[in-house]
Amino acid sequence: MKFEHFAINVEDPVTVAKWYVDHLQMKIVRQSEGPAFMHFLADSTDRVVMELYNNPPELIPDYAAQDPQVLHMAFAVEDMGGTIKRLEEAGAQLVGGPGPTPAGDTLAMLRDPWGFAIQLTQRATPMV
Image 1 (cartoon, rainbow, N blue to C red):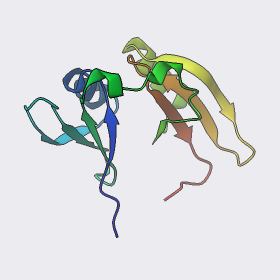
Image 2 (cartoon, rainbow, N blue to C red; image 1 turned 135 degrees about the horizontal axis):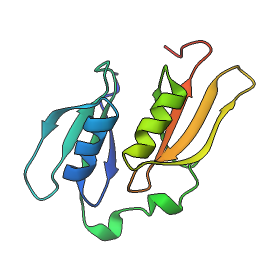
Image 3 (cartoon, rainbow, N blue to C red; image 1 turned 30 degrees about the horizontal axis):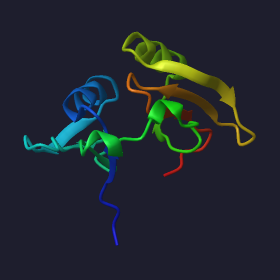
């Protein structure tokens, strides 16, 4: 079995997808113009794909109210400080870190402009 994608229900998938493409080096690999406005975005390695879509608003979680440890997506970065600054200028909010872990990694937690938690990782040893 091979992992294909994970999905996030958001209020405005078109705008959120554009922000992720513009600021997180993702690219749209498939999209629909129908009522759900599904956007499938791949990371810069084409190894991970996420779907942004819209189902009825009552099904959209209040991401901003959730603790970032409940649900977040993580991106590996080479320049932690520069990436944080760039994302803050694009509307993200730093909510924790950057700071070291016992394994020697550096982690920071941000929220995108819609409140979804994004972790930035600078690993002492790459995961994969």
